[in-house]
Amino acid sequence: MRRPDPAAVRWMILATLLILWEVVPLTGVLPELFLPSLSKTLTVLYIDRQIYFEALLVTLYEVALSMLIACGLGILIGAVVGGFAMLRDLLLPVFSSLYAVPIVILYPVFTAWFGIGSSSKIAFAGIYGFFPVMLSTAAGIRTIDPQFLLAARSMGATLPQQIIRVIIPASLPTVFAGLRLGGALTIIGVVVSEMLTSSAGIGYLVTLNRTILDSPRVFAAILAILVLSIAYYMLARALESRMVVWQSAGRRQQSSSRGEPVAIPTPAAA
Amino acid sequence: MQHLANVSELRAQAGEAAIEVERLSHTYAGANGSVPALVDISLTVRKGRFVVIVGPSGCGKTSLLMMLAGLRHQTDGTILCHGQPISKPDPERVGVIFQEASLFPWLTTLDNIEFPLSLRGTAREERRRRSQAMLSLVGLEGFGERYPHELSGGMKQRVSIARGLVQDPPVLLMDEPFAALDEQTRMTMGHELLRIWSTTRKTVLFITHSLTEAVYLADEVLVMSARPGRIIDHIEVPLPRPRTYEMMATDVFGRLRDRIWQQIRKTA
Image (tube, rainbow over all chains, first blue to last red):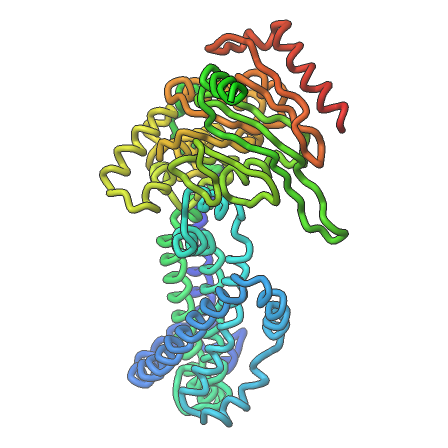
């Protein structure tokens, strides 16, 4: 039997879920309060499109700024910590253990400092996403094969050349993995903080409609968040595979056990 | 005066020196005081010769090569390359070829070969022209746009050699370049290296721990002892060139290999 195409399987799973979402509530197995049907959710989303669109804009704005903070600070501090052995030994254990703390417990403090507007969400989500970016940048720099630097030096590379031509490209795959995770965490951070204390944003719509038991509107907000995070994930992957051609190419080759073999001509004497 | 005249006469007879190492010693600062790694190494590699240093693992032969490449500093002694002391890497005088792992995986074959040229800001067309020439020298035409992970171990090593040759340095240092290859590829690559060497006529200093490789490739073999490393034998290989695989079965070949092995075993 032929192995099914993974992309086709993904779409089939998605389609099945959407169909179940529509059909199960219609059968009456679940009350509408627990799960309103897909069509009902979409209808509500359409009727309130203005409200949802504005909420989404607020959320997007907060996500964008907190991603900027998380990625900018994460790469900067990660590079410094990863690049200097002394700082690394001193600070990396501290940052690693901080990463394990559920930072959401600090959110009340953030609202006290920054108010319940966007700034507290941006600050909180920025710090939430900062840790994986910072840690993977440090790891990416620390784990560079010393052979690369030795080879570059033997070819006469100056220190700035070593940084730009070797250290940065060599650590890019690890940094990107951190950016992808950190970006996802900022979305979570923004939505969670909007759900906790706020007056705007998609997370706020979830909380607001939940308190008045308006299930279709809760699910409409959930749907919007799902679409947002999936769009983010696909964007991040696309960007990553463009920037790290050699890595994704390696992955593709490893997984190409099926289909036609990669045609590589062999030189006469090898 | 008489003595000096004799020495320079001898020098002229023997050909000019490309690398001269005099009374080189190296000591590492370890946790329990200093550890001697290399002791009183003196050697001369004449221009155009293929010299192989062979020794057991950890004898300091790689350290020695790092010092010759200007990548590490010795505690004592002098190193001259074409009469000039070596204090930092100088890719126009000395090219270094490492194991295959040193190719940059984010660059294509051609970009890897051009890397040393691009560091010095050579114009793009000039870079392409020279890297293409190197690519055909090592027999990899048509592989210029491939990434290292798409190449076999032997092909990667060809790219490394091309990268080492692209700046046309008169001296090539090779640090166990074929150690990661399987036996058959290793033999093929040794043969290829000799072919490339015979067309470029570089001075080569080649490090290995393979006795067969040493005898097959070398004009001269320097045998190093186990740590602390010192040079314990200097063997001229009288086999004619071009070398052929059949020579490995000859008595001369076997005796030379055996002599190296006995020397190394004594110190181990």
